[in-house]
Image (cartoon, rainbow, N blue to C red; front, side, top):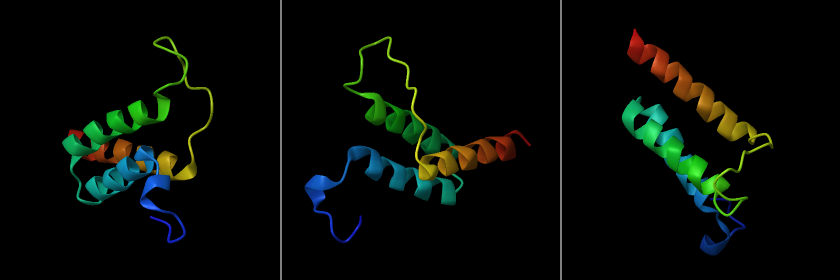
Length: 78
């Protein structure tokens, strides 16, 4: 959490991303996939209803986490 932000200013998606990064460091595929779904839900809630399609780019931190998840999936497959 950035030092100049209060607990109330931190978004849920930021906290989920932090947990996702930790699970990736620990090579925990199952938890990483679950946190990825939670991150997607947190980022798209209240945005356009059930048929909503995300059209903006994800921040570099999320792109990096998604790449690491893909690498972890490849490792698990052998």
